[in-house]
Image 1 (spheres, rainbow, N blue to C red):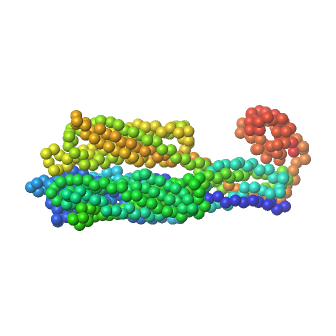
Image 2 (image 1 turned 30 degrees about the horizontal axis):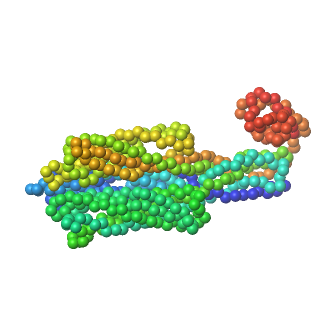
Image 3 (image 1 turned 180 degrees about the vertical axis):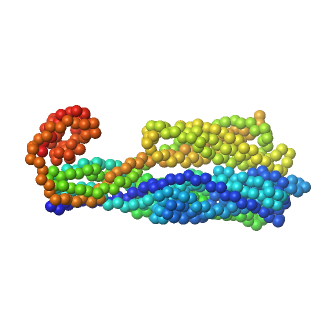
Length: 507
């Protein structure tokens, strides 16, 4: 007899692998002929741009560059302040188990620090220490059997499950372009430092499109012709659209941003401005909450049946939690005193995290680098301050079995020198937690009926239960049904049976 099957499709975005890799890139840089020799280094910083990511079987190749700025004291009569701006190109291959060319890759790059060493007055050595966090995904459309029609002799063990199935993924490029004005009294000589960050990120869904918004926040420190130092700030909004069929406002969006290229170029002196252009890639994955019916097991009382099944890891639920850590401290830095602070670079690192049910405990530190004016001088200097912190994020969505991805963003930083010389520090850190509950499910792919077998003729069996028994296992073993065993034995709760119980199994 033919078995009529009802089939369905499920799109699954499986995480196939994750890896964090620390990479060091090193190179020598010759001081340009138009600039004086290097006497001492004050600070070095930069921004990572990832040009290209190529997925190969078992590895990922990443090509990019670090746009670096080195502030130094010149070996001249005035001991003036100067800057070397250079690009440190890199091409690295990272081994990643299980990744294949047809998979997708999400990456996050961080410049941990940029070390600078003087080799001689005309040459410096730069060493960039970076960390890449990589996650590979396999998008797979799976056909599975969710029901059997017109076969009352076949017993099914069904389970209804809520999962997050993948609707689709997409990328787009957005560009932050603007002309940043500097003070009209300033004739810009050279750019000393550029900080760039993406803030106020938003995502909206409408008309089969995903709309992404963010603010590109820039801070430019520059040197004037008369040896003064000043800063200019700019906020450039960027917006991108990603086409995505069948999306709705109820769907869940995972969005990530990656800096691809940055151009900072002074305009003509009389324009008193700087041309800024940043290219950013936006990646989006959209999920739908969906209830599916899964056949966990089956058998027939009259024929022999075998089936094949596929084990898949699915996302049962995704949720997002945001909490703010407010850091309010007063610190004394003797070197700064009452001098002007031009810029403060803040880098956050999580040293340790511990997941409990309903809570995650973090231990970390913020590394502050202050660039400040030296007393009675036009020169600047740099001072580092490390502030440890402990923070707990509480949510009923958190379980110690979950996979939690934590991104820490700087929402606010304010540094004011008080009359007594202490620095009033106000920093707000946004802890963004992407909480993912995963589960393995068995999807039945095919069912085949084998030749009928002759069943034994006894009508009832006396059976004593064992520790691992369930009514389903017992019914399948003896060719009965769960309903018949429950009826004959007057069982109140079919989900609870104790070892050693005597059961009558009707056939």
